[in-house]
Amino acid sequence: MSERRSGEGQPDRTLALLWRNHRQPSADGPVRARGAGRRPSLNVDDVVQAGIGLADDHGLAAASMGGLAKELGVGTMTLYTYVPSKEELLDLMVDQVLGERRLPGPGEPRPADWREQVEIYSVETRAMFQRHLWLSQVSTVRPPVGPGMLAGREYLLSVLLGLGLTPVETNTAALAITTYVDSAAGLEAESLLVERTTGQSNDAWWYERNDLWETYFDVDRHPAMTTIWHANGYKSTAHDAYRYGLDRLLDGIQP
Amino acid sequence: MSERRSGEGQPDRTLALLWRNHRQPSADGPVRARGAGRRPSLNVDDVVQAGIGLADDHGLAAASMGGLAKELGVGTMTLYTYVPSKEELLDLMVDQVLGERRLPGPGEPRPADWREQVEIYSVETRAMFQRHLWLSQVSTVRPPVGPGMLAGREYLLSVLLGLGLTPVETNTAALAITTYVDSAAGLEAESLLVERTTGQSNDAWWYERNDLWETYFDVDRHPAMTTIWHANGYKSTAHDAYRYGLDRLLDGIQP
DNA sequence: TCGAATTCTCGTAGGGTATACGACAATTCA
DNA sequence: TGAATTGTCGTATACCCTACGAGAATTCGA
Image (tube, rainbow over all chains, first blue to last red; front, side, top):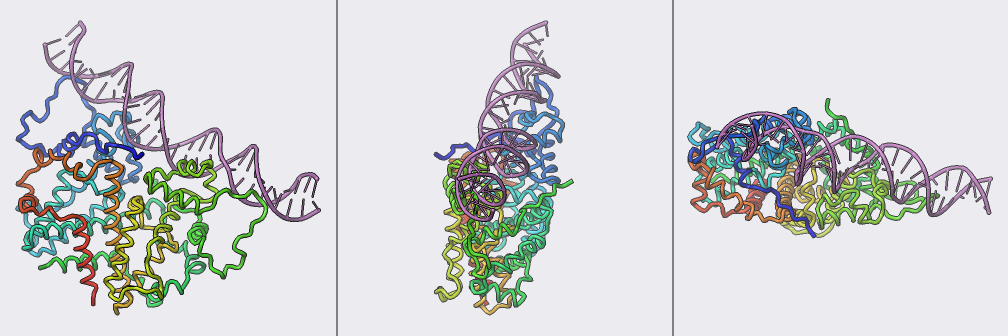
C-alpha cells in the first residue's frame, strides 16, 4: 500500500538546468534559439538566487513557491515555467551554494601538505553551512549531480590521490572524510538554526530543563555521567570533538 | 523581523511525560490520584505506540495528528489531552525507540574488550535506525532528555571511563563516537527511506542520470574522478567507509 | 438524589503548503 | 493578418497543525 511516487520526473531536464551555465561546446544546436512566443520576465538564476536569499534570511520555509513568487513580483504558477517543481528548485539552490566553495581546481596552486589541503575542504564546507544554515535541513543522500557537487568530490579525490593508496582505498578515505566533515558541519549549522528560529540559546534551553537533574535523574543508574560531571568533564564542546575525530581520521589515513 | 516562537512551551510537563514510567519513589503524592471527571479512553503510551507504528509502516508524514486520530478511532483534538503538541509527541516517540536499544546497564555483564563494547553501541544504534527509518528525519540537536537518551550516553561514557583518559578527553571521545555513529547510521537509514518512498533503487536513480557522463561531464575538469573511475576505485560503499572511519577513530582513542 | 466541579471529547475555523488545469496575453513568423 | 508558440497566473484540491468553545461523562459533597 506504499505510495508510488516518481521522485523526480524528468532527470534529463533537471540535468540541463543544473548544468545550464556550463554548456559543452559540442552541443550541436545554438545555445538559445529564441523564436515566437511571449518573452520571459525572469530567468532560472533569478529564481534560484531569490530562493537562496529568502532561505538565508528567513529560513527554508520562507522559500516556498508562494513566498518566492511574492518576492519576485509574479504569480505563484509563473515559477513553474522556470523550474519543474519545488524539489528541482531545491537541487538547483544546493548545487549553487556547493559551487560557492573556493576549492582549487586542477592545475591551480594549493598547499604542499595534504592535510592542509583537507583543511581547505573542511574550512570551506563549514563556512558554506554557516552562510546557508538551511543546508542542514536538506537531505544529501541523492545530491544534485551538478557542477558544484562534482567540484567538491573532484577536489577531495585529487588531494588523496597523491598519497599512494590503492584506488579503492582512496575512494573509501574520501567518502569517510566527506561524510564526517559534512555531517559535523551540518550539525553545527542545525544547532545555530534552532537557536535562531526559537530565539532561545542552547544554554537557556538546558537551564529550562533543570528539573531533569533535580527530580528525575537517578545517580545509581548513571554512575558514569555522575563521575564525569563531578570531574568537570563536560567542558568539551562539539567543536572539540569534531577536531579530535577529524585528526584521528587523518592520522589513520596517512600512509 | 524574525519570528519569536518559544519552541516548547512547558519543559516541566514534557519532562514529566518523558519520565512517566520512571517515577522516582521520592515523589510525595500518590502515583495517580483519580478523582472526578470523565474517564480517558486512551493513555500516553497508546498514542506514542500508534505514532511509532504509523511512522514505521507508512512514513513520518503518516504520523500526523489527523492520521493518528483515525488510527486510534478518536477525533483529532482528543489527542491534545494526552500530548501538548506534535513536537512533544515526536520527542516521546524518539526517546521510546532510543530506549529500545539493548545496552548493558551499570553492573550488567559486558565484553571485556572496550572496542567490543563500542561495537555493541554501534550495532544497536544502527539496528534502531533500520527498524525506524523515520528517525533519520528527526533533528537531534535538542534531543529528548528522557530515559532512553540518557541510557545511551551513560553506556558510552561508562565504556570509555575504563581507558584511563582524563575526564575531558573521555567526554570528547564519547561525543566524537556518538556523532560519527549516529550520523552514519542516520545516512544509511535515509538512503533506504528514499528508496522505499520513491520506489526507485539508488542504482536505478544513477542509471537515469547517465546523461551526466555522456553530455555534461568534462574530463579535463575532473581528472581525479576520471582516474578513480578507470582504476575501478568506485567499488567501495558507504558502509566500507563507515567501518574504515570508525576503526581509525578507535585506533586514535586507544591509549 | 441532585447540582457542582472536574475532566475528557471533538467539530469548526483559520492560516499555511504544492501543484494540475485551463483561460488568456504577448510575441514572431508565414 | 491569422496561426503558432510561449509565458502568465487565478482557481481549486487536498493536505498540515492547533485555538477555541460547546457538550458529554464521571465523581463528590450536601
